[in-house]
Length: 365
Image (cartoon, rainbow, N blue to C red):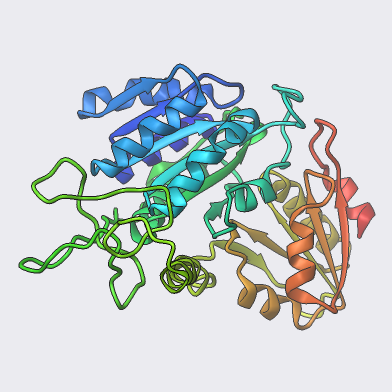
């Protein structure tokens, strides 16, 4: 199956029952597959008149209590930006599949790239964190989509699946019986018999309890700065506390929610760090170098944001050099440098519509 089809299977098994999107290469087959899956399962699929409307439908569905997902590519992600900020500020759970293609602007619709990595993290006004997961293959598309829904529900935050045209539209064999299938997580409801405040957090998690709009209890939502009651506020103390809480509820769990694949070779002087489809070339390069008697270690990140600082520092501690490889002109490498300074960090990347090859990675090493 395609990676996009595997995403749809993961969404179905995670309990997704609402999808809205607008056709865009290379993400359209997510919409097509959800059209096959959700109506027979009692779910709803809408093709919006554009990307902005599609995101609005998903926000409304999520606020009404449904697990919701949308899928698009670079130009659509740009149009989603304002409503992603709304989802962050109003703590609305949502999964956003970004099947990246070569930019900028409309770029090359049939060529892959990883050019949206920083945009997904920093595009919203205010700069508060989101979660970004990065699959390597169709199997990852399935499992990480379930994880994405679970994280969205747990933290009440938008979660991105940073796929790529080469992952989303490549057909490959998937053994479902061998794949991890995480148990679905549901957003936490308030305790019975106590007044409900729409943004009152659980003291243990910092995440507000959830009740759906349209139920028996009044639920307020606003895109403006607000207090626990959901009323607009300009009080600096309330605003500061809410912002700090929304930052901490994710960033304090960065290493706990870090998905990754590590191949650590004793005595290796070089650590390759990569993600997405490029990880497949890095695996081959590592194996070939190993066979040639020149071991290198490899870290494949499957959680890009929040950056897993503890993991990075642990694996980088005993190597002399780090090589970051990306299908762009240098984006996540800046976060690696920030986390690991003053470690020696080198970069290899390209953004021309072609996949990075094992030979290019070996040459960079």
